[in-house]
Length: 337
Image (cartoon, rainbow, N blue to C red; front, side):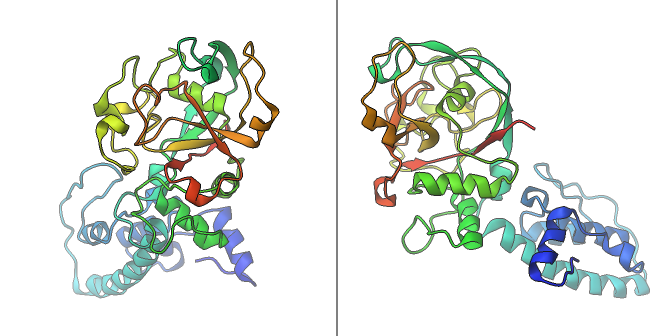
């Protein structure tokens, strides 16, 4: 549907907007099939069909909507001439749908598309409580920071999402051999590669969140100790008390979400931030060498509940190698539009 003198010129047209509906170009294509083809070509993978089965059901007259059960309307009688036209349209849809699914889901992915999992959540500007007077010295003292409005990904970046980046940019894959399951949070990604992914994924200013932004999103204006409340609950997060012994598919603990809908802010995997490790205002100055480290937040599957809080600070060298990051992942942020 997009043509240009070069592949780059055609890609620029793809990025500029959606394709023209096929029945505007060929008026013998039935409207219902034009709608199916359009859905297969959606730029946002979350808006495409999420399985070949959905395409088949749509061809049979079912209405398939993202996140809602299929509803089957009354079937429309098809005459012989229309049936012949539909056969050709079906063939086109199957080919387009296969391509769309390949791009949307990635090789071996079983879960929802990466784009659907990683949609952005708006975090309001405001004054947020940061740190804790009752925690380790590294997280003291409790104080207030103003945060401008920003957006943060609903979930940690998945293997499937990161695999798209690896394929598109030829960045080094952080895994050895076959990729892990696509719905798992990606781990072993060095800090610089994580920042590069965010800039690639969100062309309007994608980046890693600052640690203050991360904490503001996790704790909210209510200054919660945990994303989901004031008290730890083993059923709400993939921490050591959940005894899973490894990362869980993103969003596996929906009860642990923040009121805004952010998932896995406690446990699962530690998350990179863009912030150097520095002492909080009012705390003794940290040694200068700590600025070679970047703050990580949220705890992981092997972290105790008492440390997988919204205020706990960890840190790793910005130059850490993949083998030093088995339980560290990330999620992206961007400025509010």
